[in-house]
Image (cartoon, rainbow, N blue to C red; front, side, top):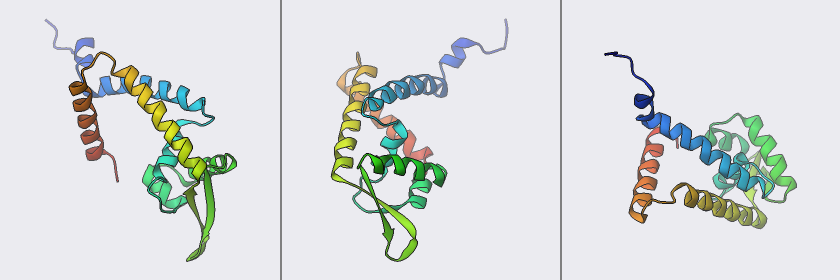
Length: 148
């Protein structure tokens, strides 16, 4: 009998299952938001701006865990779509502050609808209690692992 762990052991791990499902969910979500003319990273930036207060590009990069140049590129594209607005920080003219426009809030709502549709597809066959528990457990894991 072999001590080596095989495919069954791999498939029993949380990390493997999250990775497989994460890739599938990401691809499906990307397809839905691309129909809106954006990519998932644009949706993440819109969501990060949704608290109603302006945020600097540097703050957003830190919050999202990406390099500032990516925020600049995403903001450029979102600004062209009329979904974000850049304003100079009155306290530091070197800083650009980003805010959502009304169109940005509409696009964010459509992104949420796209995510909900993917959720429904992925969790088809689960009971409401199972879906609720899954969402709660994933949120708990995320809160413990991701910086805030």
